[in-house]
Image (cartoon, rainbow, N blue to C red; front, side, top):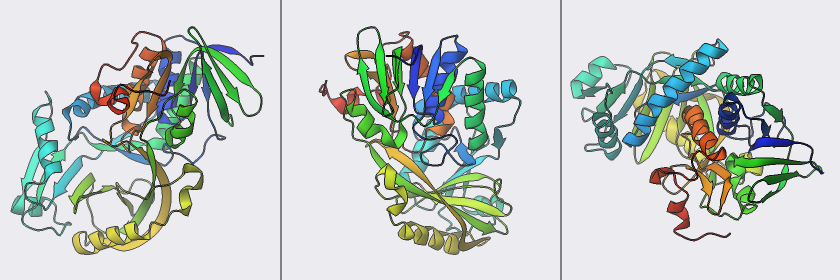
Length: 380
């Protein structure tokens, strides 16, 4: 017997699931948002105080998409009455000549109408950013619109607004099975509860692999652990940054969370199972960042003060899948955001709402389509 019927069920109350529930409820539909763990929690990919927000992307598609994301976040700020974005500017830089990441970022800005950016090289860079000790070959691109999105506050705002529009949130609900039919879906919990709806949206984050098998889909998703480090700072960049070096992205955020501590991390980590995240060793990543700080960032102490953990769910091309399941148009998925999903949350939510409501029956953008991994094959 059903515990309740809804227009739409969303599974996963991270930023993407919460945004889907918010956008669906905002449109006047009856929404149930189910979360595996008691809220709030720090098990997945949406916890923590801060995320970089930027228009500087190697692909102009995402640079353009971020225009909508900024508009959505500013709307949420206005309606909820809290500041969520702190504009610090974003500096992308590398010492490597003809660096591919830098070339793609600059090209993307050139191809994005209305974008603004500044280029710094050699001595101009040294004069502008004296607290960085880099070679004369350095090249940088400054995005004045970049900054920090206050993640915990943003997630809370989206969830609270979803509830204010009528959405119901049930946490501690561990999904056992999903059954889809032509006009409705059933979602079963391990505790015996069952809910029905016209459609279901799956945003399970690192737990996507197992849940997707319930709807007949297997995708090349790989969760990785991202250690999050905070370092004592004396004199350093007031901007968020991405430093491309030795084939890796060292990224950072200025001291906004803990006094005099700068967040500096790697866009890299060991493969994990999400239920045993912290069993994976990460000392080699810490050593890499320590060496970067010691040699390149003289105003930062190369000793970690605070260490936290997060999870990315990677796809082979590091772009997410936001689409319907082939043959099951009332089953919508959003997975594999590869560390770039938070800032896009409300825009992703709009895409998911369109598909959940049948306004669109499939993803029209190849970059985000499930078909790029299914190659015409499915397990349906």
